[in-house]
Length: 286
Length: 329
Ligand SMILES: Nc1ncnc2c1ncn2[C@@H]1O[C@H](COP(=O)(O)OP(=O)(O)O)[C@@H](O)[C@H]1O
Ligand SMILES: [Mg+2]
Image (cartoon, rainbow over all chains, first blue to last red; front, top):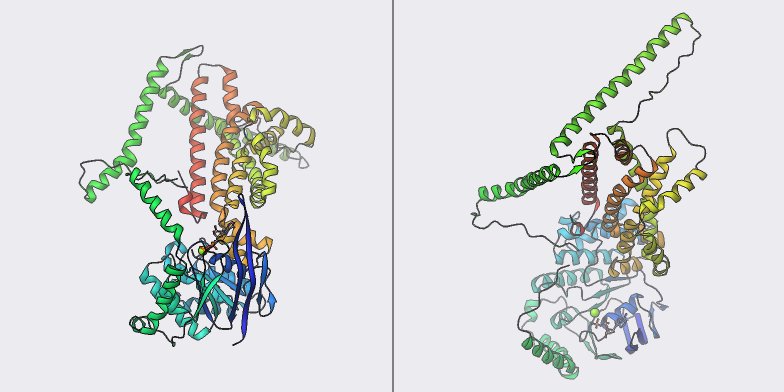
């Protein structure tokens, strides 16, 4: 398949008060057109940093990103981002939140009526037609995330970037959204890079799982080709030997090869802290 | 950041709707009434024990009398004004009968402004100053909220001028207004311009600072949305920054309006703008036995209007603000 997105020798150093911090090094990845890739790795390893470099929100210090052969230097709607905490404009309704994106991207290309139809179409894709005119604080977390996805889809991006899109949701809501996403993928065949820390989610949704090593100077450890046939059904897969094999591979990478040693140290330290301080300190509400 | 204040629970009341209603009535009506009664009692007793050169300090009863007096005075004055114009009309009509070429002449009523006119003047002045301030403060706040460099450049100046009392500005403003505003329009007297500008100088800062904070604290997620959409500078401000900052802008405006009202009274006293401040000053100079009572009426009026202005702003804020949590009492 044709390569759409290419990361070559990507590395980044952050300037911090304590000196410079090399978060990523030698990240190389090719993503084919229409492919669904998930990024998995321990928290703090640099997944968001990779995604933000692709989005253009961060600039790599070494290497670079090519999209359809053109270098990425700044953010743009052809690389739409779905952020972890929805990032809807709280003063705008679901419809209006999608509308601002559509107005920007299709100004002069679509008529007013076509825009309206396009906005409604995208909200329908994520099953939000019943709540077009609700404000973000009037809808549930899952619904907000749906609107966030509709907003990104409405930009007709070449690549859809998702940073732990379902991370803040409960398991049931997450499952619903994963199903919706698979359904949308079936028709739109978008190229997607999704960050997740959920092993099942990664195996269920992905064509490939990119597993990252721990930072600092994190890079890509292994890549798994998930050759499970589509459409995938979570119930049938639960007992599928093949599915469980891939699940096991990811778990083995995360908890054997890239075990977070410091995590255990920190955990032990926290335990000691709670021993000396039995009653939790009052939370200051401000 | 709003702190939710728990409602007072009265122990022992059954959780029935009748009990809850009774509790609510007690809390909303009963307690404030009790508070006011207590205050009136303390005021009455206290006033009786304060002897001044103009007699006893006015208690609630005297203030009530003086209020009625002011209303009667106002009505009489209105009557006199009406009579004055009626007499002119009559005379003009008579002159016209004698001489058809006579040009009718209406002279304005020369009476002195009454208490209720003064309230109106004060309101006009305070809103002029407040609107001028908002006109300057909101754009300035947005600019320094957007630019860290500009904030660092301007902040020391803001901090320097913020605590300056209106009494310090007034002489400067008076002199500047006298030298710049030469062709005095009869409807816009110098004293009014001076008061309004002094009010503006003093009530700029809460709006500037709150707007800046509101703009600077737009979440980085929303800024990223703006970047992904490649919004240009103007659209970024209009679509993201301004609406995001609206709750803070209104918090600032509300603080500014109450500052403006406080400052106004002082400014009017000294600039002789015919408002409530001048009323207080004139009564003070007057020194009659009624003066203290009338000043007390003015004090209560000032308080009441200040309260109503604040409530009005609060209602406006509730209406326009998307972040209902940001609104405190
Ligand atoms: N702007 C920044 N400045 C300094 N350090 C950063 C910055 N952004 C991320 N980092 C560091 O880079 C590492 C990777 O962060 P991130 O990509 O957010 O991790 P992940 O998304 O995998 O949890 C972390 O150690 C984080 O502290
Ligand atoms: Mg992250």
